[in-house]
Image 1 (cartoon, rainbow, N blue to C red):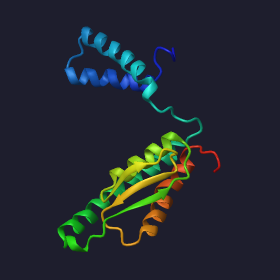
Image 2 (image 1 turned 90 degrees about the vertical axis):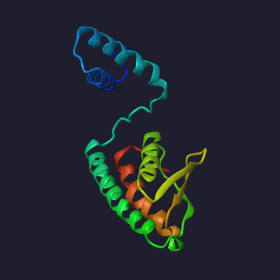
Image 3 (image 1 turned 45 degrees about the vertical axis):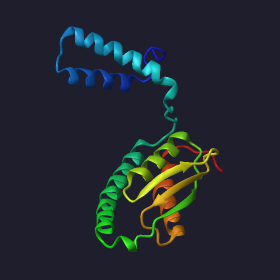
Image 4 (image 1 turned 180 degrees about the vertical axis):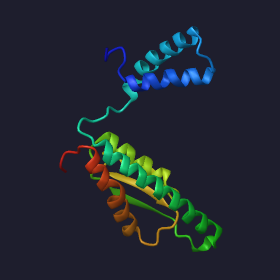
Length: 165
C-alpha cells in the first residue's frame, strides 16, 4: 500500500481538490481524480522531503502561530518603514550561521525568513551551514542574527530531531 500511495494524505487532498475544481461528484470525476491522486504523488515522490520520525506536531502548531503573528507585525513595520523617509532605511545582507541538520527544518527556516516581510533568504550555502539574508532595515546585523536564531532556529531544533553539532 505504501508503494502505491506513498503519501496518502496528499492523495486524499489531491482527490478532494480535483472534485472541488471540477465542481462535480460524477463517477468519472471520482475516477479521474483518483488516478491523478495516485499518479502525482508517485511522480513527485523523489522531490519531496520525507517527514522525520520523532517530530513534535504540537510544538510545530505553536511555532506556526508565532510565525503568523510575526508576519502580521512585520507587515505593519514594513509599511511604516516604506511610507516614511526611505533615506533612513539601512538595508543589508547578513550571513546567519545555521545549526540545523534536518533538511525539512532548514526548508522551514528558509521559508519563514522569506515569508516574513522585511527579510528575504537570498542564498543557502552548499554545506547548508550559512543562510544569506537580506534585511530591509538592519541597524545591528548581530541583533538580527541573534533574533533569527532565537526566534526561529531554536524552536525548529525542538520540533525536528537534529543530531548534535
